[in-house]
Image 1: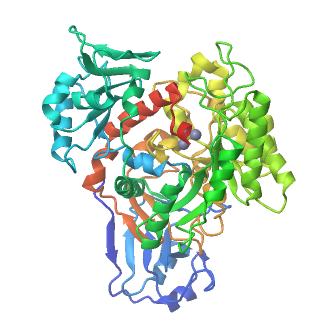
Image 2: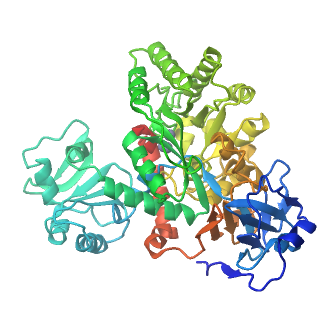
Image 3: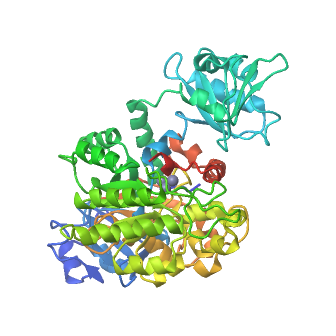
Length: 612
Ligand SMILES: [Zn+2]
Ligand SMILES: [Zn+2]
Ligand SMILES: [Zn+2]
């Protein structure tokens, strides 16, 4: 763990703003673009500053005033902008970047995936598991409240947890513990009673209600039998969602992240963000895509019910458009829609309403046009080449159909198997692609059995896309993978998988190229490249300081580099010392469990976007 950054004030430093103006730093802003006059509020010095501008300039220090970068350049020049009361951060020779923009994060789902909302039970003994449940019961907010947990693995435990293990520690609380793969769950007797599961309950098709020697349910439910319980689990309350969002934001700060896109949120969640933005309790820049649905009627209903946020800072909360979805994932689930079949001869299919493929395609195009014509951006989950081609054709048709909506920047979410031909079309029409280097790391070569080696190598063609001039962004899809952009950069550069092997040497990109996908191009996707995504003077003062040489070091070491500081609009929101409330969740063991769960969830075809 990192000891935290060295912060102090330039007390008694004589240099004033006049001296600074006399010896202008390499890149200094004119008064118009850099806000008011006076000394810097904050200076980050002794850094390897990557400005991330078009020229990929490097510098040593950054000065921020009134939340905006006032100068970036040589240290001795930037230091002249200090006055009494200027705060300074010694980057210790580490890397200084624009605040990271993780451009596809399910913020609520990520926060709710952690204790106390969901406890982690990836343990080796039943005793450890029941201890964790007992602790959650002791800390429960109300009598009879649900205890939810996840992560147990029947191959790690002597046997799946049974109601006879759980009942003695659960008091009057319903307890539901999902395994890491999503294929089964363990519940206590209270849950069995609430779900009406008895010795006489027949298992639904494709499901198993495990019974003991006496014929009584043990509390272990497999596959579709889990639905009997899912029906009675209450949704999280708004208060729980809000505090989970707060916690998620702290965890993102601890990763150097200052901007996200939250894709596919219901209007009720947007209302929560609005309220928090107005109250000043949303310390993160959120670009939202609201949930569109699976048919033109659903999109119409969504658009009719949607009201743009009022009275909020659009640099904190902005609704960019609507999230759509056309297919699943190209894993063992084989739900991505492909031109050439999977190894077993199937092709996958669209998940859009329609009795035939033609009808589904027509509906998809109608849905895209509805959003485009409303002047909004479309981001569509599409992973198979057939699905991607339909989406891109839909974007082109909508753009030709209504030219009043200029520069819409519609994009493909994931875009795993986008063909070179379609990438060329996307480059020509400024259609972006939002890729997932951290998911590439988690899946690695595991798709060989379904896609064959060639397509497994090609999956997420970063190199091909960049060479063809496509705007490529990167995102974690948290909670599917841990929002570690350093892991993402490492994966984009090395293409090494969590479970071994290299998948696609030909699609490797450089560290600098990968950094662009997490900063400048993500800002473009947000229609925000004029004010964020680089450290040029006049840009917002969002900064990520890494304790290490991100560009120069062996890429194998990237994931281990600590985040030393995160600055949002000139305010330090993370100082390298993890909050006790989030430290456990960020620990390597927890990250490992999360990635294993993410891999299993993807193989099952139950990734977060399926719900959008
Ligand atoms: Zn998705
Ligand atoms: Zn997603
Ligand atoms: Zn997803």
